[in-house]
Amino acid sequence: MEEENPSETLHLIGKPPPNQPKKQPPSPPPPPHPPPTLYPTKTTPFTLLIQPFQWLQMLCKQLNPTFILGIALVYGLSQGFSNSFFKVVTDFYWKDVQKVQPSVVQLYIGFYYIPWIMKPVWGLLTDVFPVMGYRRRPYFVAAGVIGTVSAAVVAISGNLPVAVALGCLIGITAGVAIADVTIDACIARNSIEIRSLAADMQSFSGFCSSAGALLGYSSSGFFVHHLGAQGALGILVGPPAMLVVLGFVIYESRAPNLASNNKRKAMEKVDIAIRDMYRTIRCPQVWKPSLYMYLSLALSISTHEGQFYWYTDPKAGPAFSQEFVGMIYAVGALASILGILIYHKTLKDCPFRTLLFFAQLIYAISGILDVIFILRWNLALGVPDYLFVVMEECISRVVARVRWMPMIILSTKLCPLGIEGTFFALLMCIDSLGSLSSKWAGGMVLHLLHVTRSDFTNLWLVVLIRNILRLATLGLIFLVPNVGQSDEVISSDFLNDTSSVSEEDDEFQTCLNENIEL
Image 1: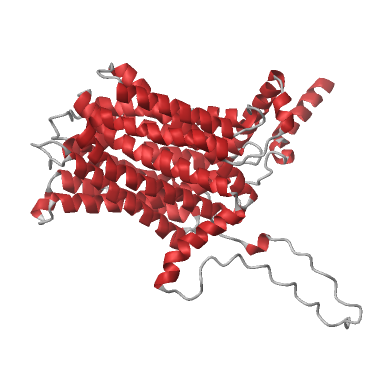
Image 2 (image 1 turned 60 degrees about the vertical axis):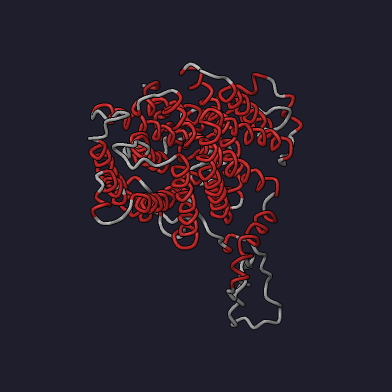
């Protein structure tokens, strides 16, 4: 993330007066205006309490308030609450209603990432296919309608076939993904135009996401216990309905000339956008960190479903209740907020490569706690299950959040102006491919080592393999640029600077002309 850099502000400096002695050195230029003071100098309990409100007030003043509302609804309600609630409820839905093996569930969960992998398509639509002159607002409405209908169908219909249920659950994630790519395009553009607030926008997004996740996780177990897994899915009708409202209230300037664009001009824009994306991804400063982000996610194979089944097993596992499973994740969401605060206060000035190296190292080491828990060594140490699992969840979530934040900031800095929505969606698509690879690879390992609904003998081995792969990722850290988080990775007008990208083509054309003359 970037912090405010007053040196980027332009100032007009007048000439010295005529009667000034010639040999006298010119007066130094006036210092740049300092950034607005967010917090009082003297720290008291009251000032600590009002700091978040002052920070939010500053964001609303510098940015449009409806844009801040959009971040809160998309990241807080749609992503944070819906994703966390969806995660817990669907785990119980596949386990108790559909009665599916954990390795098969991981295969199904991989399909949830298809709408996220299609983020470049959604981004392309928002960039080059405006509706009635608006690029963002109609897609918030579309996302809300898709999510609302899908959640209503799976909650109301009884005894759904697996294929139909999976399709509805994918529809819920599609609504979240479309809203996400739309608000990400707004954030990416504002991060380019107002560089000093890039870190603050990402911190606010992360805070909303974690706060929403806290609410979703803490309430999920309660609703599953009282409504059942299928009935609890009906709660997910609410968040996408709010996205429909957001589509009508968020501010976006309407371009009158966009309504008259015909199909041919739209397709020309698509062609230009695709070529610009290809030119950008070919740049070494872009494809190297993109490759690292994919591999760091894919190599950390997912063992979630195997561990979830073990958590709730009354014989082999600790037999956690539905409410306690939700509370475990809720405490993890609180820890995630702590991770954001740690990053925002102490780590946002660290270079990308250094921060990601140590975050990945701690991420791999902290995974050993899962092995200790599965082997029940915590009981030999006198630590009860409920205390150990909460401690393990807190550590893993803090580390995961600190590891994820610089990746998001780096992704926003890889987006050239003009296709920022589409290209940021492409980068997030690469991350989703990494998550899908992680889920499916984890499911394959669970299947190969015969981890089932009732046999968890080799679960510890699966987790150990995951930790070894996390350590192996450290060998790829050279792909991350060794620059500060407030530095420029690629020029914002990268696509307009054709001289650097066309040298190879010019050489080819010169060679071709010489051959023709011969």
